[in-house]
Image 1 (cartoon, rainbow, N blue to C red):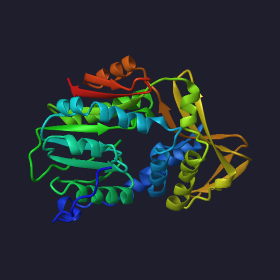
Image 2: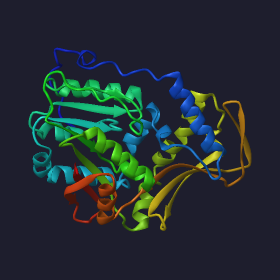
Image 3: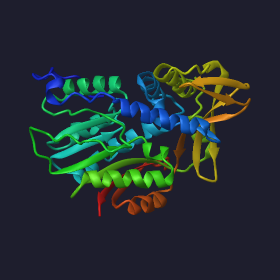
Image 4: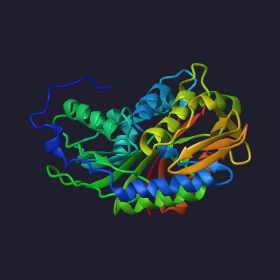
Amino acid sequence: MAAPRRRPREPVEEQAPAPPAASAHSHDADLAELLAGLRARPKHVPSRFLYDAAGSVLFDRICELPEYYPTRTETAILRENLGAIVASIGERALLVEPGSGSSTKTRLLLEALPAPAAYVPVDISREHLSCAAAQLAVEHPGLEILPVYADFTRTFPLPLPRRRAPARIVFFFPGSTIGNFERDAAVRLLGQLREAAGRRGGLLVGVDLVKAPEVIERAYDDAAGVTAAFNLNLLAHLNRRFGADFDLAAFRHRAAWDPRHERIEMQLVSVRAQAVRFAGTTLRFEAGEPLRTEYCHKYRIADFGVLARSAGWSSVDVWTDAARLFSVHYLVGD
């Protein structure tokens, strides 16, 4: 991380509008989506529910684990190719990061970019977003930080800087978050980002690559059990937010490699037959029944290029590590 600098004269709340409060409609829509998934066969829930405040903290811990290669590998790629990446992005870019979390990797770009117009972190965890935005405002007193509390998979208003007109909009989508989406959904999301980026827009995206399954499985089932705690926290999140009564001790974490689809499937497996109350509904789990919480797709570089082109993006450059564990792509709109 960059070393803290002097506190800006303006507090972060004056730099950007406060994130909008979650509406009753969004709560009802989330509840309907959850119920549909929990009643389906097989049962599943959207992976965004992994990321409440506690889940975001646990994910930050995952990124520091020895088994979890994506974070350190992608960070090394960014460091080693920073000059070329910055040259591709250019001056006065409005940098937008969907699912920004702690904005750790973004600091590399913000330190190196020539006169960025502003930085827009977008996250579904309000508390995590506010803390990260406030810290970045301290570290970069001359830069507008415009936090947006939103689910980036849905359309959200993009704030524009007041201090410096942007030359282009560039989305930064690291961490292979694109891998959490099934292929059709990934194309839709990339198309949504393409439309939002507009003329001369760009996308810097991290993409995890296909490799030995045992390396991938260890990354999602670490010896210290942090990923298991992260996965189980989803149930605690549902209990807190929706008044459910999931017993966390009655589920166990499982991360299984699916060679056919070249992806990890994260699950919570019921250890016994049980009934769970959720939003006035009784959900029944059989012993050994899985609840899918996340997909983590891995790509081959050429295959991701095809996917990006189908969403209206053209590849400018691709950077990888020597072992070809991970890749970073810079794309521009067709």
